[in-house]
Amino acid sequence: MLILTLESTCDETAAAIIDEQRGVLGSTVASQEELHQKFNGVVPEIAARAHLERILPVIHETLAKANVELKDLSAIGVATTPGLAGSLLVGLVAAKTLSWLLNLPLIAINHLHAHVYACQFAREETIFPCVGFIVSGGHSHLYECRDPFSFEYMGGTIDDAAGECFDKVASMLDLPYPGGPALSQLAKTGNPKAYRFPRPLLKETRIAFSFSGLKTAVRYMIAGPGQKEVTASHLSPGERADIAASFEAAVADCLVGKAIQAVKRTGVPRLCVGGGVASNTTFRHQLEQACESHNIECLIAAPELCTDNAVMGAIALERLRAGHVESLDLDVRPGLVRHSQ
Ligand code: KG4
Ligand code: ZN
View 1 (cartoon, rainbow, N blue to C red):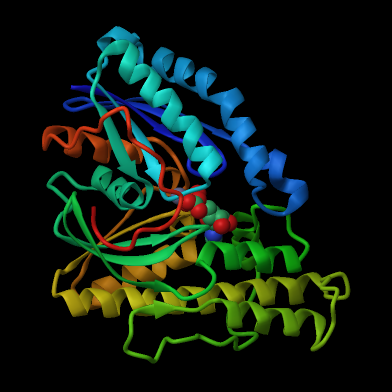
View 2: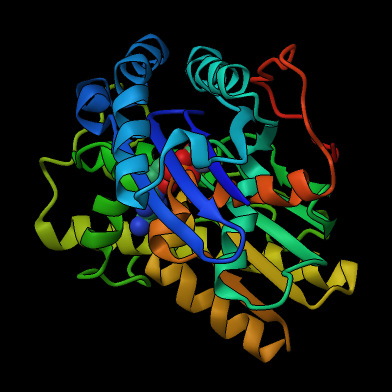
């Protein structure tokens, strides 16, 4: 079975061709970073238009890389939830058109489930059951995952997502968008103990994150209370690096602490982590160490599979095998649906 998967939930246009036996035959990710940079965040209308321009070249490039023709495909998978409505629609219309023209099964992919499924490429046996942890630009959520079709929401952020917080703090430190990678680079030269930023909700028993207070604490540290303009120009390079490292340490403590708490609650000793922030090396090391000391099997998606891509859409093969095929009435669902589907 050979599947073409499409991903256009936010600002990456991606396609992959995955063979049930041979694995990934081709994968392409077209980033829109440069289009959104000057706005310091993703502009939905610009993202949708850029997907429209890129989706066909991305599909062609992926077919060429995989040395596959459209007639060789057995199914089309597409991420339909959650994401930006206009962006999701571009992928869905492309997938429906191919499914209709080639008379192939159409498979819906939940983008968050796919982020967890990226860990399947790091394990021979199935990753299920597991606790799934998504730490991305839009989401910081923990799920109890019994099988590829039942993801039960355990808890998540009550305000900002971890990645969003990285991006905002990076912007306060005058770093370019997307801030996560730039901030973690800067943090490498800083002292994580230089500033003691808050670890919201860490000591509470509920499975939840809150990053907006942490963001405000960093803001006050940089600009001083009550200042409307936030700029890091008055800080020395060493101070900026120390703030970055101390902030990163606070986020990592919250993420790692809650993930361990969630795993203990379920009794399932396997944690599968994906999403852009999971490519952060401080977080990865800290999580691996914590899991080791608690006897938890820790799977973190390979860095190139943490940020948005279509390879993680391989979860569509599981759906195809189980007969979860959609009709051409399939629609996008931009908002987050917390319970399994
Ligand atoms: O999963 P993703 O590509 O897109 C969403 O589905 O949201 O995640 C993007 C997020 C951005 O907020 C980006 O700043 C963050 O992941 N990110 C990082 C790192 N690389 C990407 N955050 C911290 N450290 C990194 N190395
Ligand atoms: Zn994502």
